[in-house]
Image 1 (cartoon, rainbow, N blue to C red):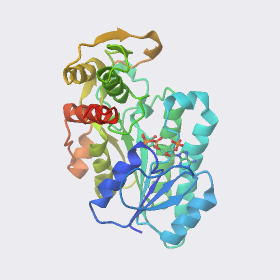
Image 2: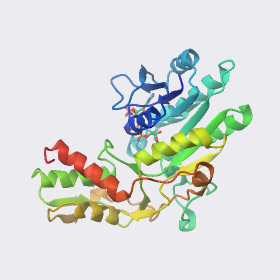
Image 3: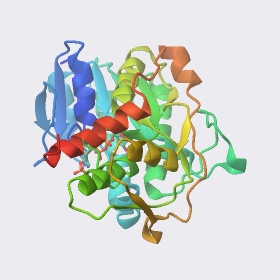
Image 4: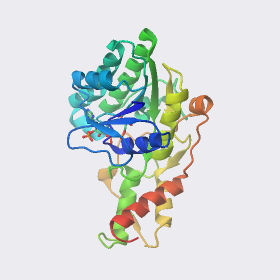
Length: 315
Ligand code: A2R
C-alpha cells in the first residue's frame, strides 16, 4: 500500500483520497463502523483509533509508505460537551498510531498529523498573521488536544528519528461540510430561501470577525505536497494567508442570489470570545513546497451554493 488515510469518513477524507487518486497510488482508507468514504477509489478498512491493536495490525499487514492522520473528534462545540472523548480520540489516538509505527520492525513511513489553527487560540496583542513560532494559547479542549498532538509528533520525530510532518489547518470549506460551519450554513440558508422553504431572512452571528478561508481541495493538495516535501519534525500552517470578514463571505453569497434577502443577527449565533482577526502566515509552506491556492473564495462559495441548489432541484 502506498498511502493510508486514517479517518477518511469525514469531510476532508474523500477530498484527500481524490487528490491521491490523481497520483495513481494504491490507497487504503479507514472509517468507523457505519461510516463510508464518500468519493474516490481506495480499499476501505474499519478502524477505531482507540483500539491500539487495530491500527498496529493494519500497519503491520499493509505497511503503507505514507500515513495521513485525519481521525479526530473535530468539533469545538462537542469538545466542551465531551472533553474526555476528545482527549481520548485526539491524544491517545495519535499516540496509538505513533507507538504502532515506532514498534513495527524495519518500518519507516512518512506520517502527516493534521492539527488546527485553533491551537494558536487567544492571540496576545492581536498578533497577525500568525506564524508557526507564535505562542499557543488554546481556548477550548479541542485546541488543547491538537496542540498536544503537535507536541507528541515533534517529540517522536526528534527522539526516534521518525518521518513526521505536522500541519495547522485554518478554516477550510467546500461541499460536504456540516452546516455548523459558517460558509456551509449561509449557502444552505440561501438555497432554502430560493427554494421557498424559508422566509427571505438569513440568520447570522458575528459578521465582523475575520478568518482565513481556503477551499478544501487546495488544503488537501497542500497536505500531499507537505507529505512529499515537508521537513520531518516541522509544523506548517495551511491557509490562504488572507483573513476575510464573515460579512464579506456573506456579501459574496448574497450577490450570487437574485433573491432580496434580509440579514438578521441572532444572539444565539454570537460567540462571546470571538478573536477579531485570525490570519495564517503561510511563508513556510510556500517556501518548502511551492504551494499556492488555486480556487478563489468566490469560486468555492458558488460551488457550495450550487450544490445546495441542486439538492433542492433548483439546478
Ligand atoms: O466523529 P465521527 O463519527 O464523524 O468520525 C470521525 C472520525 N473519528 C474516528 N476515526 C477513528 N477512530 C476514532 N475513535 C474516531 N473518532 C472519530 O474521524 C470522522 O469521520 C473523522 C474526522 O473527520 P471530520 O470530523 O469530518 O474532520 P475533517 O473536517 O475531515 O478534518 C480532518 C482533520 C481532523 O483531524 C480535524 O481535527 C482537522 O483536520 O482540522
